[in-house]
Length: 490
Image (cartoon, rainbow, N blue to C red):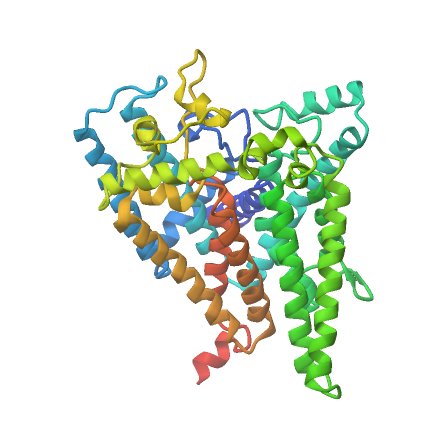
C-alpha cells in the first residue's frame, strides 16, 4: 500500500517530468502544440508539456510552502506594469493589423510572459539540493546530445548537397519543427540556424566551459583530463560552425577569449611567479594574438564556404555591392530601423509604453523618415500582402521593453537582471568549489546574454528563463561546505 501512496506517485511523476523538461528544451518550435499552450505562436517549446506537470506538482505547492527568491519581486512588479500598460492600450483607437486584433495580441502576449515566468520559477524552485542541480544538468546535456547528433546529421548536405538525403532529413524535421530546413545551414531541432546557435551558446556552453576550467564533472566517467563535458564542448563548437550564424560565431570567439583570460588568471594565481611581470605580459600578448589569429583564420576558412556568412568580407571585393552601405550589404541596417522605431514609440509613450505586443500596430507610422528602397525586409513589413500575417517585432529585447512597457517596465526588468547579477556575485565570493563553478557558469551566461539581447525579443523562448532560474537556484541553496546537521548543532 505504501509503495503506491500518493507522495510516492507524486515523487515518481515529478522525477519523470523533471527529466523530460530539461531533455526537451532544445525543441523550440514543436508543431503539435495546442493553441491554449501557445500553439499559434512562432515559439512553441516542447518543454511546455512537462512544465505544466511541474507547475502543478512542484511550483505552485512550493510557492505556498517556501519563501520566494527576492529576484522574483522585481519580475512580479514588471509583470504588473506590463499588464497595466497592455490594458491601457484598449483606450487607443487601434484597428486590426494583419488579421490580428488588440484583444488577440493582449491574450497571446499575456500567455507568453506567463509561460516565461513559469519557466523561471519552476527552474528556480525545483532543486532542493546540489544533487538536484546536477540531476538537472545531466538531463540538459542528454537533450543537447540528441540535438547535436541531429545537427551533425544535417552537416553532410551543407558540405555536399544531396537531394535524396536532404529530402529525408527535411521530412523528419517536419515532425520536430514548424519550419523546413535550410540547404546551406543547419538548424538542429530548432526553428532556424540562428536559434540553434544561440541555444548552444547560451544554454549549453557556459556550463561546459566552467566545468572544463574548474576541472570538475557531473559524470563519474573520465579518462585522465578528458570528461564528458570536454567531449560535449568540442562537439558543440564543431556543430555551431555549420549554423553559419554571425551572432553565434561572434559569441564563440568572445567565450574563447574569456575562457583564456579566466584560465590564465587562475594559473597565475596558483603557479610560481618566477618570470618578470613585463615578460609575462609580453608572453600573454603573444598568446592572445595567436588565439585571435587562429579564430579569425578558422572563421574565414569556414565562412568562405557559405555565401550568406561571407558577406562580412565580400563587400570590399564585389563592385556591385558598393551601391549600398556595408550594413545594408550584410543585411543588418534594418535592425537599426527597428530599434529607431522602438525609440520613436517610446518618445510618444515614455511612462508605460504601448502595451505588450503592440509594437507592430505602431510600426508603420513610427518609422524614422528615410528611404527604404534598398532595405527589402523593411519594405515587406510596411507593404500589405495576402497571406502575410506575422507581426513585426524589434528583434531586440530592450528595444521591445522600452517601446511596449516604457521607462517603468524597463527599469523593473533591469532590476530583475541586477538581482541575477547579485546571485552570481554571491556565488563568486563563496569559498566552496561547487558554488564557484556555478558563479563562473553564471558569469559566462550573463556575458552571452549581453550579446544575444540584441537579437531576440520573445518572452516564451526558454533559454533566458532557464539560465536565470539555474543561477537563482544555485544562489539560494544551503552552503555545501556546512551540512545542515552541523548548522543545527551550532
